[in-house]
Length: 110
Image (cartoon, rainbow, N blue to C red):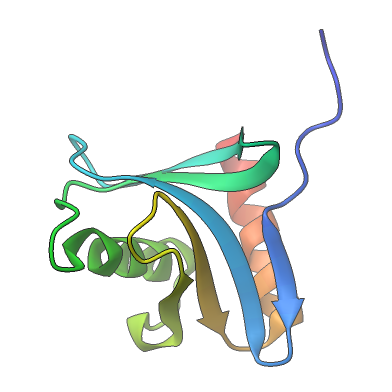
């Protein structure tokens, strides 16, 4: 069964973009797995080695996304879902540039 690929799990804001992420902590490696769906919502699937204690997994996610996009970690933050697997990650910067970079990174991975 072939269908349209899931939409990009990102939207522009006044000061950057917000990325919907499903995070799996306690993994064997830190990596971005691509786009998937979670509860009917398109999400970026990511996993990190860090444990979900004292914000360690969130910190690892921030570093992973910053490296993946080639942006400073100071521009990336977990805006919502700090204690949940489903998170909204805010990336500050030029929205058009960030949207293009995310789309390009995801097209390389699929």
